Amino acid sequence: MTEHHGQAQTDDSRASALKIGVLAVQGAFQEHARKLETLGADAVLVKRKQHLEGLDGLIIPGGESTSIGRLMREYDLVEPIRGLVGEGMPVFGTCAGMIVLANRIQGGEQPHLAVMDVEVNRNSFGRQRDSFETDLDIPAIGSPPFPAVFIRAPHITQMGEGVEVLATYDGRIVGVRQGHRLALSFHPELSEDNRLHQYFLDLVRNPRT
Image (cartoon, rainbow, N blue to C red; front, side, top):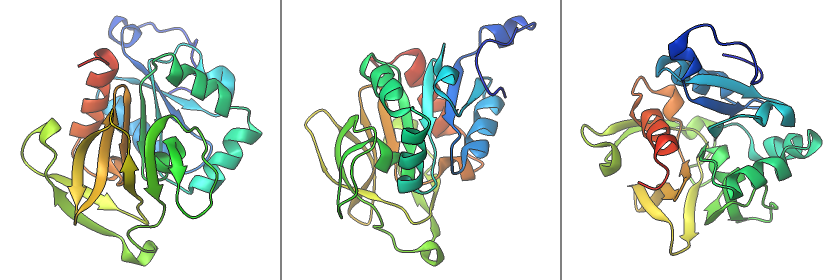
């Protein structure tokens, strides 16, 4: 994985690989980067706005949404990322990343990127000690069910007309897609199952499918 785009690519297959940024200011970014590398993408750790150059897509990882938002503002990343997503760059938020993408956050926290027409409840599934794993049916990736890891997870309480539900758990919406934007309440990077990262890479290649 690289810390920025622009390094020479000597291998032809690597040169043609998708370049996917992983926001690396806080949270579980290394796990996402390893997933992407396993699937043949070039994982780019994004810590400054110059690292956004030449990306095909971006992942906002889990962590602590308030801290991620504060550091994004400190490093002047909010407007550049918002602009790229507005221009059509695919983006994938997991757990806290879902909160960072949302237009509205229950409980008074100010929105961060505000690029998805959803409202989220920040701590829907309790504290760290209430973490759990469950098998989720996600028709978009087929069978078998996906082993989803929930850690202090949010869920979606409201969404706009253009938002598609991908997964629910216990009556709560935990996975959505809005065009080229994807958000999950759980941590797919902590599973051995690569299908949701592959789903995002497929979305990057064909954002209108």
